[in-house]
Length: 145
Image 1 (cartoon, rainbow, N blue to C red):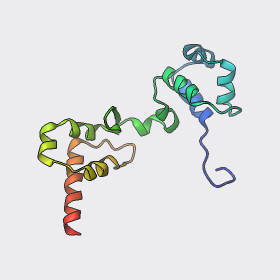
Image 2: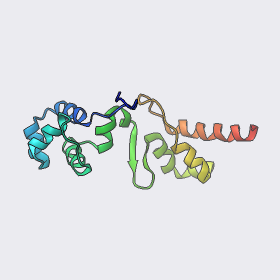
Image 3: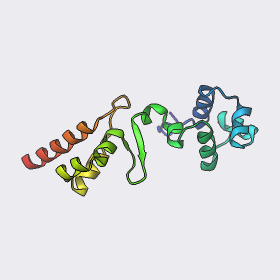
Image 4: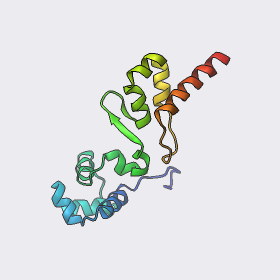
């Protein structure tokens, strides 16, 4: 915790840990992504703050998204990227891609927002059925209110 009471993100340590996990030296990663090794070292040791461009290069070289680098792979292991929807659970993506199910359920725009807002523990991998049930529960809750 910092003195202000907020927890700070040690970006340098996250980069160093991801680099080591990938089995790369600082020199190898710097060469791979075409950044200065000295700057990489400064960032890893917390002596310099990385630019977003730098984070994109480094994460790309580590075969990660910037979000994965900063938040950890655990958070993203059950999430996929959809150009239309952004980052969503794979089960929700499967639900959206099932035209028959979407026609049958006919979720409103408000219900879709609610489904996208669901956040679960990183170990939970919700299925398409989970999101169908969540939609039905949402509708039941609204009717009883």
